[in-house]
Length: 331
Image (cartoon, rainbow, N blue to C red; front, side):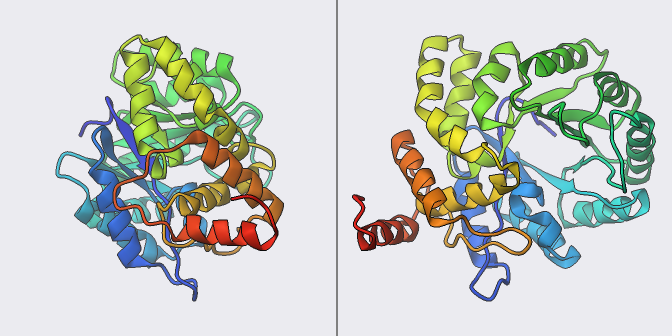
């Protein structure tokens, strides 16, 4: 299983008007995205996919759909969010049966839990799951201000002492110093740990420090740009990398801004605007963006000049143009 050297897409779940999963669109989008050179595979059932709003059966089927559409050399990582260790093990085994190559286990979540104050919870949780699943595991590191962010020492200990840990989703966001500390410590371990930055607005900073690839929902609608940024930094062409970063910056700032709870809805709205998904419908508790927010995302997406994804259709763009014309705004 190869995690490094490319981009892992944290994919989006499309829904129909009745809020059921649009399986046909999911299969089409996965197949189209998998055809982009440099795409290493998919992370399925992460927050970008609205996994907390999916049923266990839907999550398992989503893994199977992506496995069917991805190339034989592309990996499928099943994200598992929350739940006790026995439940997480069960869900991991179901994902493995459906074709997952690895799991990405997120922080344990319980009342009043703070990873900084109780790091031992995370260590024992991940170790128990690793022993029960016996398959490759990625850790999920968050920004230092998040209550589920692991202390530096706890993250390094889990990576070093849990044999099945093979990589870390590096979502330290604006905390670039924290990214540096975590990255250098993880790369100093006597085992291979794939460090995969994920936050679009800080990708250039993270890649410049060092990374083994990218893992992000941004690639669900900007796969070519993510692959190209990784390539440019790896080749040492920082002038071109900075230019690409500057072109994407307004869109990244719009997507990854406050309130952070809207992040994954913004992914879906932009994906729809650029024809990378058939519908922007979300399931509760997520909500659609308000008109003024849609205007901001639309303008940022136009400035970014994203290369259309394979098989892109434009109902989102056409409807957005119509909506703006109805309120007498230039398209």
